[in-house]
Image (cartoon, rainbow, N blue to C red):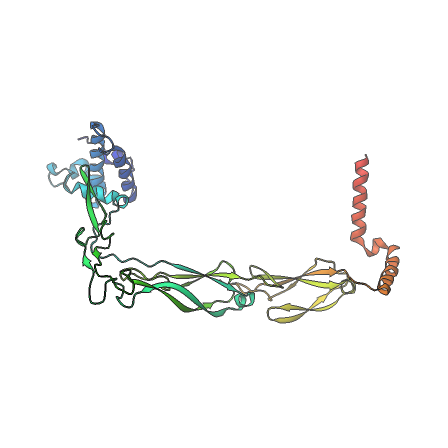
Length: 377
């Protein structure tokens, strides 16, 4: 057999770790395997050469000897070597690399327990409860360990019997060509045992459907998209395995007044034309009650006022946000004849000094005039 450098055979550097070495061998083995290359002597040589390199480089002791002494360090005929190719079982080598493809499991025997599935519960909260925090009761449909058979799946007074096909291993060895691999036992489906007399309560499943009531402590400051984990409150595991977790997914309802953006709250505050022109003081709502908001004279629609510390304290820590109040000047409607006359009289007093009393309107019209004048050029 060729005595090419083993690292060169696998196409890896000397600094390659076990994962890289295994990956390189897997690629070559799949490419040159005799079952894929029937009657191809060259492919068989390449396959054996790659397998010899992998057997040495995947073993820490042999790899160390090879790195120090080269082929002589792992040649049993050289004296004092670490043992050459053929010292181990080839099917074990190949099964170690490809066991995950063919369903191998490392030879573990007996019944196999598995962790229960995680569950999700969608919880809708009012904005006030999300900001302040609250304890809520939820009712969750789930699977729990059968209280009759204690999760074994067998009728009370009986026990699961060892599978006669895999003899309790949960896996069977399958011959493919000149090598063998392990597959999940088709009889017991990997459990290693068979229930001949199933439990009447759970029908051999080891778990039962049940609705359970849980108390969820919602921390202050949660927002839509946040999750609360309740460890061990998911579905029961099989064969005595641990239960999964329950994830409570938070969704905050729309509020009639406030809109939340991170730690800040936003709200629109309608004000009259008189308050906008002359100024005044208004009461505005917050989540802690009403507060006074001073409106300066000549306030324009869309002006934003900040009330510091009246927002939300984030659930993950940080400063409390603010309440942002945006004023909207409201045009009066349903006017009486007298009110209309007064407004017309008021308008006449403004026309003589429109530039002074309505600077935004004046500048806008000047801009429009300039725009059309430029178009005429």
